Length: 401
Length: 107
Image (cartoon, rainbow over all chains, first blue to last red; front, top):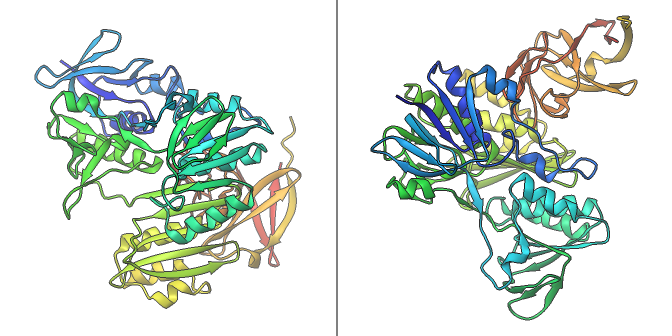
């Protein structure tokens, strides 16, 4: 006999454990986490308070106990056997499951250049503690990768008066996930704050005090951080013969190729109705996929439909992106007192929205845009661009129609 | 400990959008004052109970306010936490409108 086993105790696995109880599961639930702490939130890692990295638990030990969730910390799964429905842990224990959830998350991509071992990664509490213990005013840090994580880290380090250099292989920073309009604004802000950019540059070698660029030149640095993205953690699934691609492949119900095994969060690549699979790396996705997977593991039949959404805080600016903006979309810009919004239409329908503003200035409007997108109605482009038209009014008339 | 409430004049009702919220700082603390769809007014602690985010910047729909950062939600009439990641209720304070002036009882 088995119960439910969850591999990975990040935002996704932990959320799923509680959601399973809420969905009425009374069997044993075992949550397996590789790190030696209570499950914790990752977003605060890049935002140290008074110089100290925060370890903000997702839930307390009491909450786990009250929900009868058996949390095994500091161990990971080393083997999965689908025939016998067993998971072998690194400490030798063998768990039997009725249903299994893979929520192993992602691992940082490592540099492959000479001296790559000098570069620190930035994903876990231990990584953050190592980086910020070196982050003193007057020191110099080289960040390899100008994506969201690299840019957020740069902003925090500048606030500590650490000299920051960003080395990025692409011609512009934030090219992957952020619409060009806001990527350019954020780039300009970082330049104003004194961040040095080395764009379109590869790396030849890293030493203990410098990064040597591929086409000559070097960047002196007391500390080098690699922020070149993550790879889904799917070794267990691959070895067990589950279908994998850019992640553990799952259908709309978050079921893997084995009907008793589900996957969710950073490690899961969900099938698209237009073909292919897509993987999301965000806090909200980890939570919402966890909830859908939990309901389906409890016997439900819910297709995962949540709109992708993420935020990023850099200096006093807050960015939010909802949906997947594409260059082919019609763009409509709305200017606010403290920020700017851009709406993306596809054949007259609102499909995505993004905004950048001081603090949470654009949050309310992005939320309303999400509801308009979910309503799936045609929206008047002129009204979207007019700051005097309240989006709530547009939503109410769309819902009444 | 004293439970004495002090009525404080906070703003004009017209300063708050209908079905909206306004941040109100007083004596080193921060609050959120809400104007419901029926023009009724309410007051809660200003910060989300999950992380220190000002709720007045969040979306107000009917009698619900949503945290602008993580989408936790509260019924601002009762302070009840309605949606995760918010799980702890918000403290509420009495509020009233007299001649267009919003007063809240803090303490």
